[in-house]
Amino acid sequence: DTEVTQTPKHLVMGMTNKKSLKCEQHMGHRAMYWYKQKAKKPPELMFVYSYEKLSINESVPSRFSPECPNSSLLNLHLHALQPEDSALYLCASSQESSGLAGLSYNEQFFGPGTRLTVL
Amino acid sequence: DQQVKQNSPSLSVQEGRISILNCDYTNSMFDYFLWYKKYPAEGPTFLISISSIKDKNEDGRFTVFLNKSAKHLSLHIVPSQPGDSAVYFCAASGSSNTGKLIFGQGTTLQVKP
Image 1 (cartoon, rainbow over the protein chains, first blue to last red):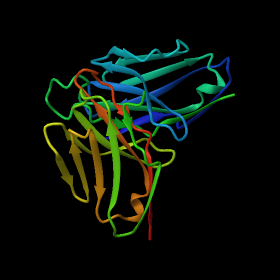
Image 2 (cartoon, each protein chain N blue to C red):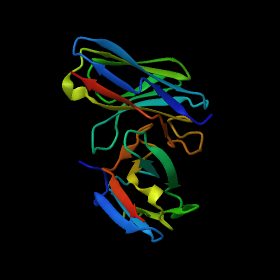
Image 3 (cartoon, rainbow over the protein chains, first blue to last red):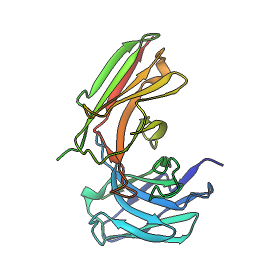
Image 4 (cartoon, rainbow over the protein chains, first blue to last red):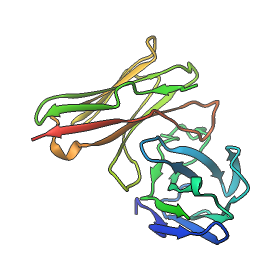
């Protein structure tokens, strides 16, 4: 299984709603990532989890709250979002994030994304 | 400050010919480089990578060249096929920025039949 899955595929929410995005991988990867991508822009890193611990938070507003319940799952909890948060949210995973294994350590595999619209 | 730059927003080539996509970087600490392909409404798909200890890596129709002194890499696609039409992102990382991929702005490739 070389796939990263994300649910839902599309999400429309109001500014007062609470919702969650889910990501799952079964490749045994120990690093998982959340990215945000706006139209015609490159993906921007939001969070990195390494061995189920948050290792990087790219100064993301607290209305985005990541959670890594286990090594295969990654959630992104959303609350009180703004219309400018509308974007494609991408999850990715890799063998690990530090490169110490000497492998293709940053070969990240991406999911299909969740298209989020905040009204 | 853009550390990874793809200066050509778009490229159009004829089917069967070579496509050359270029990428420049400014951070000399980058030691691993990747190319991703992205179709609309999908996540990026990993294509090929290269470590800074090499200057060339080949996988089928795709070859990546790295010129460390010029801080430049390129992706060659030979022969180009209409199915290659997509946005191509160059990305870079270094052991000093663990877990972070820095992406370029992307180049939209159109391969005409």
